Image (tube, rainbow, N blue to C red; front, side, top):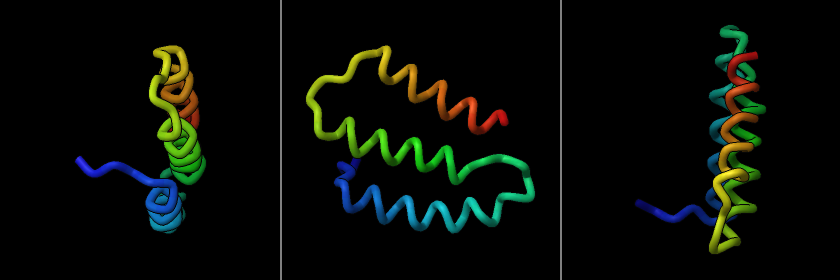
Length: 68
């Protein structure tokens, strides 16, 4: 498994947003979901310990964006 750095997270976000725009016809706000994931990854990678509550909050945010 390759560790994600801040720059790789940003690069991945740019590529994923292009793919997400192509998926707009499905009605899923994937660009927003990807943005939430990438922002959170950058923030959490700077820490050694992450609580289960924080992970749950992120997963619920992503689920809400995908479910519409």
